[in-house]
Image 1 (tube, rainbow, N blue to C red):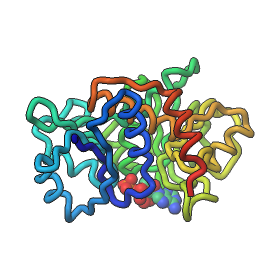
Image 2: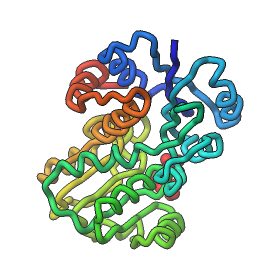
Image 3: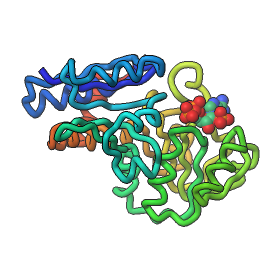
Length: 270
Ligand code: ATR
């Protein structure tokens, strides 16, 4: 038996086991199974140094390990190196490779839109904003603004990565072509009835919320009322897993089959 899994803390809400096990079954891998491991930062090193004993061949990596995982890998992809964060570890030809498939996951839904985007506004400057920033740069979006409750963090990112910053209080005055939420506001649990945007969304073409539970979030519901094109975090989630699964097995599952499976088997989630 070969083991795969997701490591993070907390991990109980992850959809990764459902999706990867569905895909293993779909491609007839009877010898592969995917598990959720709740690993605290304290236990990370111990866990990683025993992977060979358990025949672990691939890992999805989530909060709070995306940066720390890099020091474990024997090879780091140029993209993961650039972002200084990885969400995938795969055992290949005797070494562990760290890769970042979040950027691919973020970009993919946008590449399928036929909408010209020149000005973007990112809400939030935490770990999750990094893949978004690099994704927007890859898409050659010319003007990227970042806004964060704690202004100093946005300023730091703006300085290091060539973005513009706007204060949390003034952000609604900006009318970007695309607005992206990377904060937890709107996420199931204590944030569910919150939105990071306290104004109308007139003139904004695309609203992208990287949260996938609930689907849609309050922000995306607001956006639909203003006829914006909306993208949910579930799309990003499926695409990042699709590329990850390809690294694990060489196979590519269908985005729409996966979406259909998750919608009928896992939503609504508490
Ligand atoms: P990280 O991604 O670094 O783990 P996080 O706690 O998940 O951090 O928060 C992600 C982003 O959401 C951060 O930019 C955070 O803003 P701060 O830098 O001010 O902490 C933002 N965020 C979290 N809670 C928020 C809230 N209640 N209102 C506005 N922004 C919030």
